[in-house]
Image 1: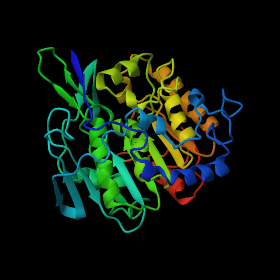
Image 2: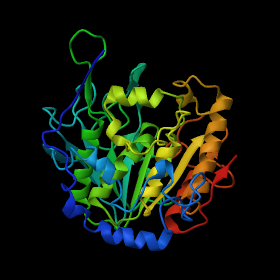
Image 3: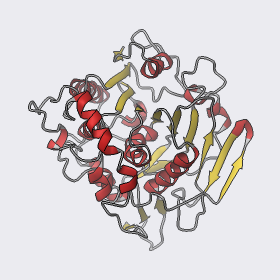
Length: 396
């Protein structure tokens, strides 16, 4: 196997987004008054009783995610524009990018994302899932049809015709997943060693270009719901720092549906190397990828960095789709999920909640929107998050 990291056509610099980051100074002052620091919502977190910064001992007294920008995570922001935008049925606008040196699906198909205007000032960014193509196996969606595919447009959070959908009036940005790298990759890979590129991982490029389109279409939302399922659940965490470049002072509610980051030692390091995705994780955060292989420290890091973020995780206790890819028993996986949810809520009691169901099913926010868990449903649980209800963690 030969991996060729891509090189940006322009260098990453600390000051590249200085104009866009200026409001962050006010943002930090407000956040400090509200939460008293970023080591958890009470100024401290388990393992960090002095409130020195939570995961990795990070000091958030700088612009949120600045270290990631310094590492080059923002290298494709502002670089690509769609070559065509077409209005489809239902007011959906499909934005297609050129396959020549820009955003692309991992097997070479064109990449496109879509927007749909709503009836209010709120915005939902929806990140679709669809498997993964990693060093130990490749099973990922290679392309999607233009727009919001018909069946999906009538399901869960995407269903604008459902009067009980809590986001039915939101502007929507729909990001179909076809990069194979959970929205993070930046490499050409010769998987079979024959000297030819087999996979073009463009997750970071596709994500950055999509968010550029979103920022132009919806420059001033009153708040943002950032939601993703499966691989899109992992993807929301990669999208957050890029969204912050464009929206430094907007409240973001994040829903990670079935991408909660439970793994085994060494797996993420190997996969990130294969995808050339290390820029997604701050070098100073020693605990972002834990010794157990889990991403709980990374999730805590994001909450530490971003006081205007609230996060909800959704999972079954023994997710069968995830376990197909892990050398772990269902019982061990369940124990890890339960422990990770408890750890995150203990560290961030005002800004983290979980929705954990019995069984081995996979995803809720489209196909299992009305499943009863702990006296509520995904529909009502998300409505409580958005509309000031009693948003609490629930479990079977």
